Amino acid sequence: MQVEITPINACSKTILMTVEPERVDKYYQKYLLKAAKDVVVPGFRKGKAPIAMVERMYADRIEDYFMKDVVDDVFDEAAREHDIHYLLYPEVKDIKWEKGTEMVITIEIETEPVLEFKQIEGLSVPHQPVLLEAEVQRYLEELQQENSTMVDVPTAGAEDQVECELTVELAGNKIVDTVTLEAGEQYLRGVPELLGKSVGDVLETTVNGKILRFALKEHRDAIDMEQDYKVSLMLNSILHKVVPALDDEFAKDMEFDSLDAMKSKVADDMRLKNEHQNININNSAYISKLYVDNNFPLPMKTLEHIAQQQIEGLSDPKWKDYYLYQMRMQIAQEMIHLYIINNLKRLMPVELTEADTENYIIHEAILKDMTAEAFKEANKKDLSGAEFDETVKNYTLLCRLSASCEYFIPEPEAAEAEDTDLAEQDETAVDEIVEEILEKEAKPKPGRSKKA
Image (cartoon, rainbow, N blue to C red; front, side, top):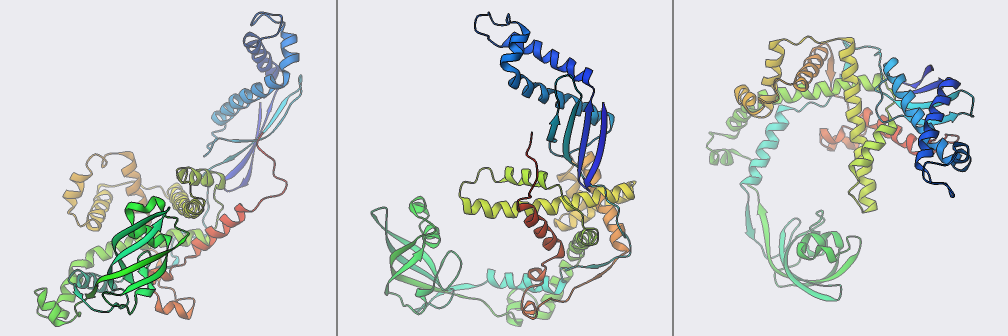
C-alpha cells in the first residue's frame, strides 16, 4: 500500500492511500462470502443463494459496507506504520474504486500543530498585572460593604430595596405575592418606575418576564422571559444601604490606629499572594504574545465537535447560540495554550528537579492561602502522578522563559477606556484573532466535498 501525507496547514493533513488491486479483491471476496451467509434471497434458504446472485441483488449495499471496512483497516495500518496521530476520527473525503482495480482513498485528519516560533526569549510582552494598590482598595471596599447597614426610608432612591405586594395574572390565574425589587435599572431586579415612590404608594406598570421570573421563583415555569407583564405594586417598605466612609473612624472600628495603618497591614498581608498571581498573569501573557507573533490555525472540526458536545443539554435556541459562542472561544483559548506549551517543551525539554516541584507547590499553596505542607496533604494522591509532573514542567518552563522577557502595561486604545477597569480594557489581540478565525470558519466554503 502506498501512503502519501500532504500538509494542508499546521494542524490538518491529507492522507492519500493507494491499495493494490489484489488486496482489495481479497477484501471484497471475503466480505461477499460473509454477506452471502447473512442475506435472504427469495427461493433459497438463508446463506444458500449463489454468490453471483447475492452480488447482483445487493451490490450497492455490499460495496458500501465493504469500503468502510477497507478504509478502517488500511488507515489503522497506515497510522501505525507512519506514526500518524490525529484528534477526531479521520474524515473520508473520497474513495475511487472499480472492481478489479486499485482503491484510492483520500482522508483528511486534524492533528496538534508542530510549531516553529520566530522568537522565544527576550520578548516585549503586554500584560495587565494585578496591582497591589488596587487589590488593597478592592478588599477595603468589600469590607465596607460587609459592614454596611440597611435603614428604612420613606422614598425610593436608586438601588434602594423595595418590598412590594405584587399582583399579576399568569395563565389566567391571579397571583399575589410579596417580593423584593430594586428602584432603578439593576439587572434582573430593577424597576425604574419605583424611583421617587413612597411607602403606601400603588404603582401600575409593566415588567419584563426576566424580572418577574426572578421575583416569583415559585411561578417561574409559567413566565415567558421575553414577554412584558402588567403588574400592580403596592410599596410596603423601602430599605436604603448605608455604607460607612472609608476613613480613620472606620479603621478604628476595625481595630487599627488609622486608615493608613490599616492599608499598610492589608498590603503586607496581600503582597506575597499578589506577586504569585502576577506570575500566572505574566505566564499567560507570554503565551498570548507567542500566539500573536506566530499566529497558527486551529483544528476547527475538533473545536466545533467539542463545543457542540458541551451544549447538548440546552434547548433554548438563544441560550444555545450564546453558550456555543462562549464554548468556542474558551476551547480555542485552551487549544492555543496547550499547543504552545507542548511545542515549547518539544523545543526546550524540561528535566524536573526536586526544587522545581517544591517551587510549584509553594506557588500553588500561596495562591490558595495554604501552607506548602497543607497543600501536599490535600493533594497527596496527585503529587506522584505523571499529570502533576507535566503541570510542574509547564509552570517551570514558562517561568524560565517569562523571566527573560520585558513586560509593559499597554496604553488604552480609546479615550473612554480611561474610565474603565484595567480588566475591562483587556480586549486582547488573541481574542480578536480567535474571533476572526471562528467567523471565517462559520461562513460556507464553496466547492468543499461532503463526507463519503
